[in-house]
Length: 287
Image 1 (cartoon, rainbow, N blue to C red):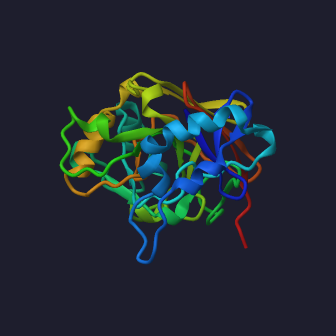
Image 2 (cartoon, rainbow, N blue to C red; image 1 turned 90 degrees about the vertical axis):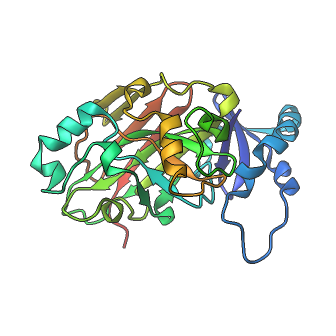
């Protein structure tokens, strides 16, 4: 299934050019009291609720997808874990351009490790990216995103895919500069996710997916997930060796070469085969 969230936090399933409104299924989520859980309730219950969602589809109201406001398909991730320079050509690109590395120490991912983006930076595609510090360069970075479906700690790479609920298209927006990665990558709207969560049963092998990023019709990035230095299983194993991963946690897997600056008024189309396309506008800095 292709699960989405839209408009006023309604639950949908993408079906061609339509959204099937299956929001009634949300009534089956467990009630929560303070303190709230550290995970996303829907993702944690997704496997249990899948039959109810399927049963609701034939009777669901159909809405043209181009008339709804698509939100992040994951509402409440506890963590956004991201992989730096996880494509060899992007590593070479960053090392060779001072406008990208700003004298920061750039290491191979197996030495650099992972980093975290602020959960407050997460948005769906319909809001758009609001430039932060527009006097500085901001770049979009297209990434495959794995969504954790079950709690895991110290998972092995061999078992890691069993913890994945599904996959999304992600944009890891980045302000270039000398500061720490997490600081420059965490402004509001600088983490775009969507357009849906494709459940893992529909995408058993995410290791050979073509992806492209166009800005104003011009191609900026073209890659395939087979070229990741550390694939999804290895990234989950690495992340879970440091953190307990909970349902809804996001693993941004890294970006390929071809990063370039964007400006207000630009339109980005970020596509990954078998998942979908993010159609995102670049907006002026929010006041």
